[in-house]
Length: 295
Ligand SMILES: Nc1ncnc2c1ncn2[C@@H]1O[C@H](COP(=O)(O)OP(=O)(O)OP(=O)(O)O)[C@@H](O)[C@H]1O
Image (cartoon, rainbow, N blue to C red; front, side):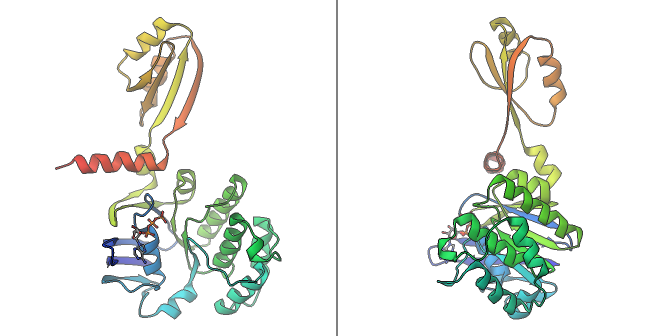
């Protein structure tokens, strides 16, 4: 459904993307992950046919995205990282303008999306918050039920309730066979929606992983507070991977094997326990560090 082959672009400042290749199958939700400046938006802009690559190519629905820009864009819903709105328009006027470009006749789905995302589309865009603008952009990307939806950081600016609504929208569209490519920093969002994800760093694609592999790379940090110092000391000496500790408290980092941790912890009187999930950035850094250390 979507193929990127050897995509390369070097900007005049030497930055850019190098030899990016991946494929997204029909009905698949594909995540695009990486720290700021990694090259996610640059790859996405090429996919939309907005930039001509120095080398390589990309195809959507079998069409070259650069040569057949106009046709390809009819199949695609797109949310840019930063939306450029025409001054003085209301949300509705912008969506009408987009609907004309998309050849959209029936506005039922648009109204439904506005209702679900809970915003007043009659507001002038210049008066909208970042989150509201993001919602307008999301409606524009989804309302014509395109075969492929490409989203650059779709939930930035959305509150947790709206992030949840967004996840539901994606899962419903996926059910209908829609193909997605989206960049994100949010692990829960990727975890809930994506089948596979590409990890990009310094313009290079370092890995394509299915979501289960990505989950197994994630560590949970358990902060355990013991009733007495002796127990904390014994727990520390048990061989579990200890991150740090003080007299009563021990923090261990567990990846995958929770049983050994639970069995050991069950031997002592525990006063309290907190769990922290490693964020996506830390997983990348872990992963990159390990890659960099390989000969
Ligand atoms: N038009 C341009 N001219 C020069 N450099 C550019 C241009 N567009 C992007 N870059 C540079 O290319 C690199 C990749 O940028 P890109 O916007 O693709 O990153 P990103 O992964 O989307 O980051 P973010 O998460 O911050 O959006 C960055 O170093 C950026 O400064």
